[in-house]
Image (cartoon, rainbow, N blue to C red; front, side, top):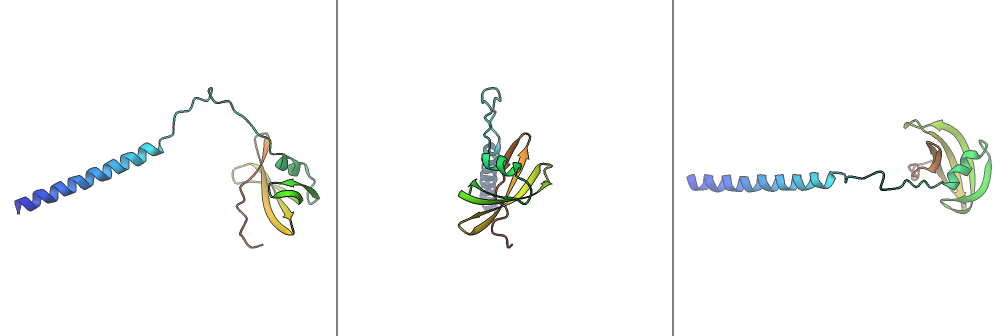
Length: 123
């Protein structure tokens, strides 16, 4: 009985050490690297499509180059405030007879095209 108990304790210790090593490895991988903000220059890229849609009058349509392709028919919607507190605007982009909903938002002074979270939802 004593020998079996020692084997069980040794096995349990090995399992515990393996779990701790795995946990330590996972935590080490999640620690962000130190970044020196002075070493990396900030480069802002203007999203020309988003800026052009932002300048459109509500409910007007224009043909322009969009992230979905050249000669896209873009219809601007209303402005609204997002859950993040940003000024945003819905737009509908029609390319080759297929319509897509897009959103542009303003982050500080720059307009950008938001990720397509609406695609795949019924209209």
